[in-house]
Length: 211
Image (cartoon, rainbow, N blue to C red; front, side, top):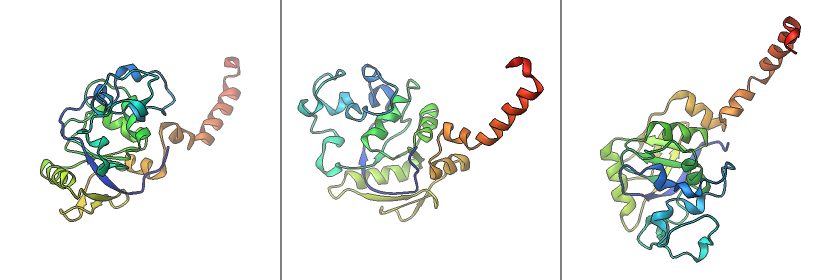
């Protein structure tokens, strides 16, 4: 998993509450467990004017010019602004894979669905919860013609670059450590590989009949 330390990027606003995981990545695209290749279908039903199906040539599909991800001023944005309860609905981890594969590294919203929130940390995506007034202010700045470029510092737990001064955010300490080090659940287990080997060696000696 790619570590998260500091991110400077334009913010793209998705001005809808209760965005569910089927809207983030529709069920017909969940054909793989490779974690890659889903970015082209992120928000598929909103980004494109036709119905998306696996195997389509996305370069030739008609795009919705009014959807933020298709607007030139948000091109290359790696920070996504959202409203309440982002990531609700089914628990599909593919939704997070699609965001990461597209290039999104941080989300800012007043609230996230619980399972989606946990899945973000497992895949190197930083979900930041801020109060409604701050999120509303960031939306206004992002939707302004000039947009807003934010600098997120995970170590300091700060966001800079907006008209709101330095914004501090909270994050669980253990999840912060894993993001800074780029540790997913498997890598976290492998940190204890030596102790695991010692246990298996001792168990073979104490209970040889099991082997």
